[in-house]
Length: 472
Image (cartoon, one colour):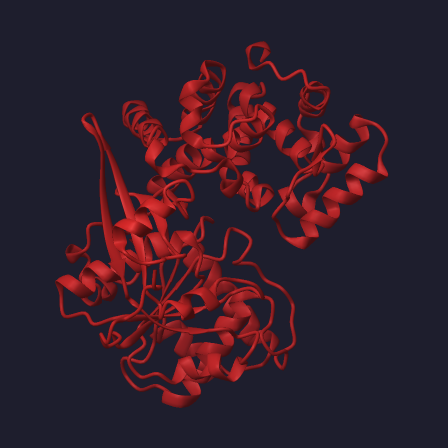
């Protein structure tokens, strides 16, 4: 079978720069633009920028930026599946191969938006020289791009950009702006450029909500036969989609979101939406991953085939996470019920291994706040969240029962994990070292009364193979 191609169809005008070509953006943002392009006169093509040295640009280029999204909705009568041909991608750029080509994106007159999903660790300040080509830091790359645009267009009206990060960190838009302005100071880029960023560019805090499971390996051959193409970039997701945006109101005038099947909410305060989603949905995912791994569970929907694991996750959500969120208990319970129903969607085949990417930074953002708030409120530790923490630290040993665990995380985290697990002989020393990593957690967790001893107990049980969730 042939690969997908444009079949002579013209590309949409380049109006969007997207940092990231992974499953989530292709299954969410790119589908959203596809729907808007087809239902309105938006005519917005996406240029995909590879944010790290390795990625999937070559595969995108081989398919001329065309792929198919498989969207599933679980109804009482079964699974309803729709297949969407996505051709909203109008170009790709690898800044690690040609940085000048990347910077030239800033000179495209019609570009209006920058979207990104560089994981929770992506929006971070890393000191770097201005002359460094293709710096590791995502915000540093964006600063270079904005500078090129400012140098090209100056204060010409309508040339500032809307920056819409999708990373799951608190106040992601504000944080990105803060780091970019820090680079402006470091590199002495001048008051005029800084003023242009402040006045002409709009940084939006966002929240994204859609479960994207990625390439449907089990069904790929059947789907490819149905499509009639050898699409190696198939991406599967649930039909449900929510994008909450806080920021400059002019964005509403430029994005015809009513023409998309994704629910888009514009709000002056994103906090309650974010806390509910990040702590319940993402927090439950992150709690589930290491525990499910040690139980041999490979897919999220298999959670409902194991009463012990389902009870564990429900206890974590309803008894330990929900009490820490300052919203209506009924509203939170209803949302949690919907989340579990979404987890049950077996058509997604959402692999535990795929959620495990960058689990340390995810735990810090998605679970640790609930754990600490519960402790401060009740003066006791939430045992299910703590057990998950212990399982996570054991997972980062990188080996279990003589078999290697393929860890995927920032190299600094991987180096630290290897050092801790090889340098110390006792589990007490290992746990103490992990908890004392203030650079990761933001504080010394050894100061939390009882946390170390509880994690030592749980971790000792896990490593010995005594994994009985009924004992918790």
